[in-house]
Image 1 (cartoon, rainbow, N blue to C red):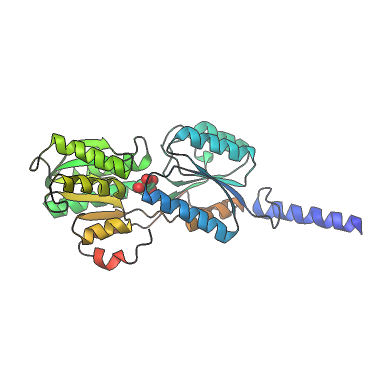
Image 2 (image 1 turned 135 degrees about the vertical axis):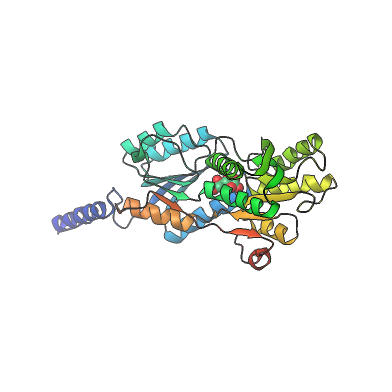
Length: 317
Ligand code: GZL
């Protein structure tokens, strides 16, 4: 009898291995290590909640690490996940570069890596299985195209950039700049607010010391948190955001869409943070050895005075 039981156990383990392509024992919950960027914005809070809630819903054991905005924290978290022999690793990389060595360690350990939210720059595609997130270049271009239409292609822009070296900051700047290059829209100054609301307010306060009303026409913020901070500074300076100065932004927070309804923000392009379902779909396929698209982009909408009122009640973050 013992011999049959042993054989059965061996068989079910082998089947489990065969089905998932890795050593995920049959019937055992998937163990996923998630190296999150940090907690810098309302977008990030919604992203973390989505990743945790969806893991719980799917019975996935999630090992979560908050990188606190520092790549070294994320790198050590990934090394820990490798040492713990997790079944898969998800990274939301704070910056684009510096990921090659740790991704090589994961590959050598035969642990698949899914890049979520922000992209990485590596010279070897085999270092990660796929990217799941938003197309920041499209976001930057959509904002620019809206401004061209709204202003007839004329205006002086103050830019509040995201985290230096991050894919969203790099791409939202470059695509925006390219899209206005042949127009009369000009970026006259640019500072990083690190995607943080308090920094967005401080950067705008500094701009308002350097430029008076009539010296600039538009504020382009790489995310809603910085735009909402900037609005406070603009109002504190006695100006009307959305009227004396156009404010355009990216993310699609409920608070920002409401600010459009209130006439304080003029345009917001969505960047959906509710990534849990699409990320774990990719993880489960990769672990099972099934093919996944190299890049999966979310569908992102644009909100302005024409559609914000109808949309605000449905915003989920
Ligand atoms: C974009 C994400 C950015 C958001 C910010 O996918 O990485 O980081 O736009 C967040 O709000 O802080």
